[in-house]
Image (tube, rainbow over all chains, first blue to last red; front, top):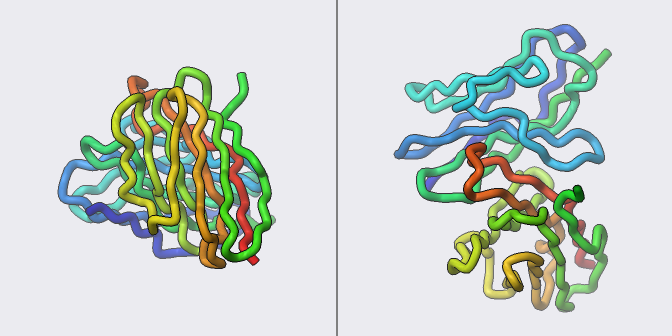
Length: 109
Length: 116
Protein backbone atom coordinates (compact mmCIF):
# COMPACT_ATOMS: atom_id res chain seq x y z
CA UNK A 1 0.00 0.00 0.00
CA UNK A 2 1.11 3.53 -0.62
CA UNK A 3 1.60 6.24 1.97
CA UNK A 4 2.29 9.97 1.87
CA UNK A 5 3.91 11.74 4.81
CA UNK A 6 4.00 15.47 5.41
CA UNK A 7 5.98 15.85 8.62
CA UNK A 8 5.12 19.47 9.34
CA UNK A 9 1.61 20.46 10.38
CA UNK A 10 2.49 24.15 10.36
CA UNK A 11 5.22 26.09 8.64
CA UNK A 12 5.52 29.78 9.44
CA UNK A 13 7.85 32.06 7.47
CA UNK A 14 8.24 35.75 6.83
CA UNK A 15 7.41 37.34 3.50
CA UNK A 16 10.36 37.09 1.12
CA UNK A 17 11.87 34.08 2.86
CA UNK A 18 12.36 30.76 1.05
CA UNK A 19 9.81 28.04 1.60
CA UNK A 20 10.14 24.27 1.49
CA UNK A 21 7.16 22.07 2.26
CA UNK A 22 8.26 18.50 2.80
CA UNK A 23 6.62 15.43 1.32
CA UNK A 24 7.85 11.86 1.52
CA UNK A 25 6.16 8.84 0.06
CA UNK A 26 6.19 5.11 0.34
CA UNK A 27 5.29 3.16 -2.80
CA UNK A 28 6.90 0.21 -4.50
CA UNK A 29 5.93 1.23 -8.01
CA UNK A 30 6.48 4.31 -10.12
CA UNK A 31 4.33 7.06 -8.64
CA UNK A 32 2.69 10.14 -10.02
CA UNK A 33 2.90 12.95 -7.49
CA UNK A 34 0.91 16.12 -7.05
CA UNK A 35 0.59 19.13 -4.81
CA UNK A 36 -2.89 20.42 -4.03
CA UNK A 37 -3.62 23.71 -2.27
CA UNK A 38 -6.58 25.02 -0.32
CA UNK A 39 -6.72 28.77 0.25
CA UNK A 40 -8.94 30.15 2.98
CA UNK A 41 -12.62 29.67 2.13
CA UNK A 42 -11.78 28.17 -1.27
CA UNK A 43 -11.95 24.69 -2.72
CA UNK A 44 -9.07 22.30 -2.75
CA UNK A 45 -7.36 22.62 -6.12
CA UNK A 46 -4.43 21.23 -8.04
CA UNK A 47 -1.25 23.29 -7.76
CA UNK A 48 1.20 21.23 -9.77
CA UNK A 49 2.07 17.74 -11.05
CA UNK A 50 5.55 16.28 -11.13
CA UNK A 51 5.31 14.97 -14.68
CA UNK A 52 4.62 18.44 -16.00
CA UNK A 53 7.81 19.79 -14.45
CA UNK A 54 6.10 23.15 -14.27
CA UNK A 55 6.39 26.20 -12.04
CA UNK A 56 3.07 27.50 -10.78
CA UNK A 57 2.86 30.73 -8.79
CA UNK A 58 6.61 30.48 -8.33
CA UNK A 59 6.39 27.01 -6.77
CA UNK A 60 8.35 24.04 -8.06
CA UNK A 61 8.65 20.45 -6.90
CA UNK A 62 11.15 17.83 -7.96
CA UNK A 63 10.59 14.12 -7.61
CA UNK A 64 13.58 12.48 -5.93
CA UNK A 65 13.11 8.74 -6.29
CA UNK A 66 16.24 7.96 -4.32
CA UNK A 67 14.94 9.83 -1.29
CA UNK A 68 11.28 9.12 -2.13
CA UNK A 69 10.52 12.80 -1.72
CA UNK A 70 8.58 15.47 -3.57
CA UNK A 71 9.23 18.66 -1.66
CA UNK A 72 7.50 21.88 -2.69
CA UNK A 73 9.72 24.94 -2.90
CA UNK A 74 9.45 28.64 -3.51
CA UNK A 75 12.41 31.03 -3.28
CA UNK A 76 10.48 34.04 -1.98
CA UNK A 77 7.23 33.52 -0.09
CA UNK A 78 4.34 35.93 -0.49
CA UNK A 79 1.50 36.57 1.95
CA UNK A 80 -0.99 35.22 -0.57
CA UNK A 81 0.79 31.86 -0.42
CA UNK A 82 -0.71 31.29 3.02
CA UNK A 83 -2.85 28.17 2.65
CA UNK A 84 -3.11 24.47 3.40
CA UNK A 85 -0.92 22.35 1.13
CA UNK A 86 -1.46 18.65 0.48
CA UNK A 87 0.92 16.27 -1.23
CA UNK A 88 -0.77 13.42 -3.10
CA UNK A 89 0.27 10.22 -4.83
CA UNK A 90 -1.39 8.30 -7.63
CA UNK A 91 -0.48 4.64 -7.79
CA UNK A 92 -0.27 2.84 -11.10
CA UNK A 93 -3.65 1.56 -12.21
CA UNK A 94 -5.50 3.38 -9.45
CA UNK A 95 -7.55 6.51 -9.99
CA UNK A 96 -8.00 7.67 -6.41
CA UNK A 97 -5.21 9.77 -4.97
CA UNK A 98 -3.60 9.11 -1.61
CA UNK A 99 -3.15 12.37 0.26
CA UNK A 100 -0.83 13.37 3.06
CA UNK A 101 -2.10 15.02 6.22
CA UNK A 102 -1.32 18.50 4.93
CA UNK A 103 0.91 21.39 5.95
CA UNK A 104 -0.44 24.80 6.81
CA UNK A 105 1.82 27.52 5.42
CA UNK A 106 1.61 30.84 7.19
CA UNK A 107 3.47 33.74 5.56
CA UNK A 108 3.84 36.67 7.91
CA UNK A 109 4.30 40.25 6.72
CA UNK B 1 -19.98 26.24 -15.97
CA UNK B 2 -20.64 25.15 -12.43
CA UNK B 3 -18.12 23.16 -10.50
CA UNK B 4 -18.77 20.20 -8.23
CA UNK B 5 -21.79 20.94 -6.09
CA UNK B 6 -22.35 19.44 -2.64
CA UNK B 7 -25.26 19.62 -0.25
CA UNK B 8 -25.88 20.31 2.50
CA UNK B 9 -22.96 22.57 3.22
CA UNK B 10 -23.47 22.06 6.93
CA UNK B 11 -25.25 19.29 8.79
CA UNK B 12 -25.64 18.93 12.53
CA UNK B 13 -27.12 15.67 13.70
CA UNK B 14 -27.54 13.65 16.84
CA UNK B 15 -25.58 10.52 17.51
CA UNK B 16 -27.39 7.49 16.14
CA UNK B 17 -29.21 9.30 13.34
CA UNK B 18 -28.67 8.57 9.63
CA UNK B 19 -27.41 11.28 7.28
CA UNK B 20 -27.25 11.63 3.51
CA UNK B 21 -24.77 13.85 1.71
CA UNK B 22 -25.20 14.69 -1.93
CA UNK B 23 -22.70 15.38 -4.70
CA UNK B 24 -23.40 16.69 -8.18
CA UNK B 25 -20.23 16.33 -10.28
CA UNK B 26 -19.10 18.45 -13.20
CA UNK B 27 -21.10 17.56 -16.29
CA UNK B 28 -19.25 15.03 -18.42
CA UNK B 29 -16.94 13.85 -15.65
CA UNK B 30 -17.19 10.10 -15.43
CA UNK B 31 -15.12 9.60 -12.29
CA UNK B 32 -16.43 10.59 -8.86
CA UNK B 33 -14.65 10.37 -5.51
CA UNK B 34 -15.59 10.83 -1.87
CA UNK B 35 -12.97 11.86 0.67
CA UNK B 36 -13.20 12.72 4.35
CA UNK B 37 -11.21 15.64 5.75
CA UNK B 38 -10.67 15.50 9.48
CA UNK B 39 -8.67 17.95 11.56
CA UNK B 40 -5.07 16.83 11.59
CA UNK B 41 -5.83 13.72 9.53
CA UNK B 42 -5.63 15.07 6.03
CA UNK B 43 -7.83 13.64 3.31
CA UNK B 44 -8.98 10.08 3.74
CA UNK B 45 -10.21 8.27 0.63
CA UNK B 46 -13.63 6.72 1.02
CA UNK B 47 -15.00 5.51 -2.32
CA UNK B 48 -14.52 5.94 -6.07
CA UNK B 49 -17.00 5.53 -8.93
CA UNK B 50 -16.06 5.20 -12.58
CA UNK B 51 -18.80 4.92 -15.17
CA UNK B 52 -20.65 1.62 -14.91
CA UNK B 53 -17.75 -0.23 -13.28
CA UNK B 54 -18.02 -1.60 -9.77
CA UNK B 55 -17.04 1.13 -7.30
CA UNK B 56 -13.79 1.00 -5.34
CA UNK B 57 -15.10 0.88 -1.77
CA UNK B 58 -11.77 0.10 -0.18
CA UNK B 59 -11.70 3.30 1.87
CA UNK B 60 -15.07 3.03 3.59
CA UNK B 61 -14.29 2.88 7.33
CA UNK B 62 -17.21 0.68 8.36
CA UNK B 63 -20.41 -0.89 7.09
CA UNK B 64 -22.28 2.14 8.39
CA UNK B 65 -20.97 3.99 5.36
CA UNK B 66 -22.37 3.45 1.89
CA UNK B 67 -22.61 5.38 -1.34
CA UNK B 68 -24.39 5.15 -4.61
CA UNK B 69 -24.23 6.93 -7.90
CA UNK B 70 -27.38 7.03 -9.95
CA UNK B 71 -27.35 7.39 -13.71
CA UNK B 72 -23.63 7.97 -13.73
CA UNK B 73 -24.07 11.45 -12.31
CA UNK B 74 -25.29 12.44 -8.86
CA UNK B 75 -23.91 10.54 -5.88
CA UNK B 76 -25.20 10.14 -2.35
CA UNK B 77 -23.04 9.19 0.62
CA UNK B 78 -25.06 7.70 3.46
CA UNK B 79 -23.84 7.32 7.03
CA UNK B 80 -26.06 5.19 9.23
CA UNK B 81 -26.20 5.39 13.02
CA UNK B 82 -23.78 8.31 13.11
CA UNK B 83 -21.07 8.45 15.74
CA UNK B 84 -19.19 11.46 17.06
CA UNK B 85 -16.03 10.29 15.28
CA UNK B 86 -17.88 10.70 11.98
CA UNK B 87 -17.70 14.46 12.43
CA UNK B 88 -15.63 15.81 9.54
CA UNK B 89 -15.83 17.60 6.22
CA UNK B 90 -16.90 15.23 3.48
CA UNK B 91 -15.43 16.21 0.13
CA UNK B 92 -16.61 15.08 -3.25
CA UNK B 93 -14.47 15.36 -6.37
CA UNK B 94 -14.87 14.48 -10.01
CA UNK B 95 -12.51 14.05 -12.91
CA UNK B 96 -12.27 13.23 -16.58
CA UNK B 97 -10.85 9.74 -16.77
CA UNK B 98 -9.63 10.22 -20.27
CA UNK B 99 -8.02 13.54 -19.51
CA UNK B 100 -4.31 13.76 -20.24
CA UNK B 101 -4.09 15.66 -16.98
CA UNK B 102 -4.52 12.44 -15.05
CA UNK B 103 -4.77 12.96 -11.37
CA UNK B 104 -6.49 16.34 -11.55
CA UNK B 105 -9.48 16.11 -9.28
CA UNK B 106 -12.02 18.92 -9.10
CA UNK B 107 -13.34 19.27 -5.59
CA UNK B 108 -16.58 20.55 -4.19
CA UNK B 109 -16.78 22.87 -1.21
CA UNK B 110 -17.58 19.98 1.09
CA UNK B 111 -20.30 19.05 3.54
CA UNK B 112 -19.38 19.73 7.15
CA UNK B 113 -20.94 17.09 9.38
CA UNK B 114 -21.16 17.57 13.12
CA UNK B 115 -22.44 14.69 15.23
CA UNK B 116 -23.51 15.73 18.72
